[in-house]
Image (tube, protein in one colour):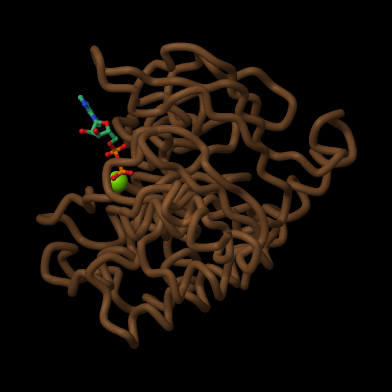
Length: 284
Ligand code: ADP
Ligand code: MG
């Protein structure tokens, strides 16, 4: 698309060349991460790494800790213990806003758009997370006005990128579920993420919308943005992922390439709800 996308990949390449951890291809490193809610170990001593340029999917049955993992990574929840390193920088105790500045973008499992506001304004809010004057800027200042125009341009670019060009003036709440999800992705892209965390972007989408999402995800990676995908649609996950991590009851039970994970007896038993021993018995 435009210069903004070129700049995103240029920034990404620069990081890879200068920081130790990113040079080895690791964008995000999670070490022994836990999040407990009282007695509930929603995320329990989980470690894994996300490689630059990958679509890395985090899967697992309902309640296995996927959304909690995203919420701890983005700083919505404090980790109970463990360490999160983004591009070589320890962000474990950083505020959510600082993590956005460090290059962590996200969408939510439950769509969080301002439904009474136009689509374009919703995307501009993402961009304001990155600009100097912020959302509650002083409109009278010429510098702020110039920044506002640039913000608007960038938001229009991102809408175009997700295939929603021309929808900017529509009210967000009037769009189909699938199109609202695309607006959320555009808003997250406007924050200039190095790593984009997507929580069930295909939920509630019809087959045509899922197909469009598949194309958008591949184009995001082409821009040099790494993706961590939480998703239930296994056809999409297996088709699009470079690597998978599987959670069950908050613990990591498997990881690897899609074909490896699909054949893993622990994964099969977690999804089918059978006893692990039964699967092992059945396999001899
Ligand atoms: P998933 O996204 O994989 O379906 P979640 O991360 O939403 O799973 O939930 C993992 C576990 O943590 C569940 O048992 C859930 O009830 C619990 N949980 C999640 N968020 C909270 C919270 N804010 N307070 C208490 N328990 C929570
Ligand atoms: Mg969830």
